[in-house]
Length: 280
Length: 205
Image (cartoon, rainbow over all chains, first blue to last red; front, side, top):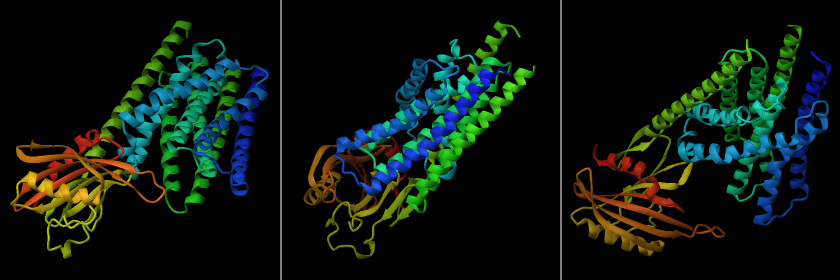
């Protein structure tokens, strides 16, 4: 394993963990602002504030990524393109497919089992396949995609773009958001989609540089889709029952734990792969 | 493994991922069809219907205290409306309602429609008949009335436009009126599902 690659990898995990910490600070800051300053918004300024809030998790991650990714930096334009492609795919295919073709709001939330199965088969597979496609048929073929961890970087950028678009759509359709509740929802969606995309990216990265069976990356998409479906089923269950305010925080804690666990898992897995590759 | 074989393996991998996703979405579509097709039986005042599973059903609360005048109506949206038998709606989409009402028979359908229109016109804001026409549903002669009105809502709310369609059918000594109402939307978008419900409504059963 070469030293540069190891440092590069470490810097990415540090960036991910620092981003996670900053997101917690971001949520607490907006929560505190709402509680103490009690800002008053017009309808337009509320929507604009919501849209800006929707972009902040992605900006935090991207900013820290660039500060830390100095050893073998990915081209900024390609990471940003991956981010925008994620958002475009969400707006052009993901949301219309789920809302207009599958009309998930009509049936998916009917029972526990429809939430779970529909969440995995329809929402999970649609969203994770689009993130997979955004990387697999664009940057994956590029020479800049030159080590396994790049799969995670580009896929995470795509996932954040996807989440940012979902959040913007939510803010606009709701005519703005309650700041404290909105910022938690925005952060949950961003953390979750970045984590699921990271799983897809991990499998894509390994597939590109190591000999693997043809089903290897499909397994990654299946795992991400299952995580996606299960996570949102649990979140929708805990946030729609019982103590509404407390459960909003439970959803946030779930997302933070998911993001932390995914980061840890991917970090360990990539290290193991590189050690195995280096010793061959 | 040669570079060409490696590339071929990657292509197989992406094809397999695409196929798995398509299979998952097809299974998801099957789940949607199955879930939307599930119904539960509802019987109120001798009128039965198959209501989509998971929908809320509100029965008329005044069945025991019918008015002397069978055409006398409370607010048509109220559960106090003596002609209303029950209303059903999806709790996730309360903006769309199916309602079954019963009127005395022995009067032709256009006359029943005219009386209902008169009553609703008095109680609802800007009640308008958009279209009315005789129809045939599964060999049963009926009468269809498309209407619209404005629901002012509570103080401070933005008023909403309600559009709906009444289907009148004679049934024994009664006339059943089966109604679809939607807020700020076109009822024709929901007609397919509504007609499935309509076909299950029957007296007795």
